[in-house]
Image (tube, rainbow, N blue to C red; front, side):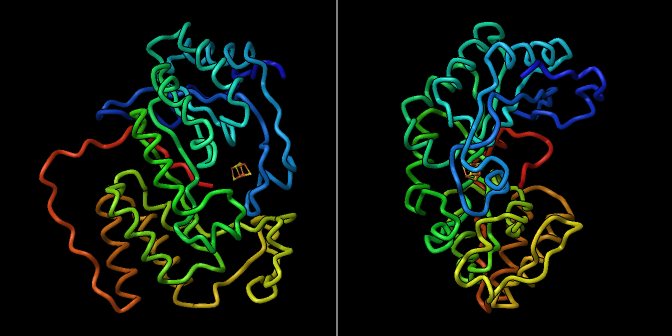
Length: 307
Ligand code: SF4
């Protein structure tokens, strides 16, 4: 795997920035691995890699970091589907990166199961410059998590939060709120889960609008109840269409997507989504208590990540 040739690409200031404490910095992007060891049933990586992953040699990754730091990057986002598929490789790269660029920060994506399995690594990754972690929490419904074959339960999410908090690492949880198995009650439970943990600022509205993608080759096509929800192939968008048995849930998704597209800060959008969802369910949305202390926005990239 040669070092990526970035000579023909736009300069880093044309891409998403890294923002922390209100200061925006140029961000670079590298991959320390390709593919994924796991086979979550909804994941578009799986039809391509089939549970295999390949490491990018450390010297190649570092050479790519070096050329982006030379171009002004002060933060690196690791784009690996899961940075901790090869924990030894990830740690080796993080140590080398910190030794050469001690002020450089980075973020990475890893699954809940890996946060739990490799909990001992997180304090060191933090000390080496990790500033936030993206993790596919997906759902607070064990029924949906089982369908997706995620390898974690709703109870595991709190354990993952505790591991990250213990290391001082903010999380950007990603969600898959709309699936053929999602009920309106599931959606309200998700909103309540986020609110109880005060994670509203960590969840951009687009994350609350994501609809399951069923690409050609998806393992979900063989679900025993697929005939109940699967529609025709939408070849132009590389996905099979589907609908929720409850039309109200599909209506909610369309309206949450409109809120996400309208933009605005995460707290305000969250409150609007709550009013909408509770309204559709014929219930009163929780009253948002005024904040009694300044709540610093978590570090993030200026372009919200979603899949
Ligand atoms: S969802 Fe994440 S952990 Fe699961 S197969 Fe895809 S990349 Fe791997």
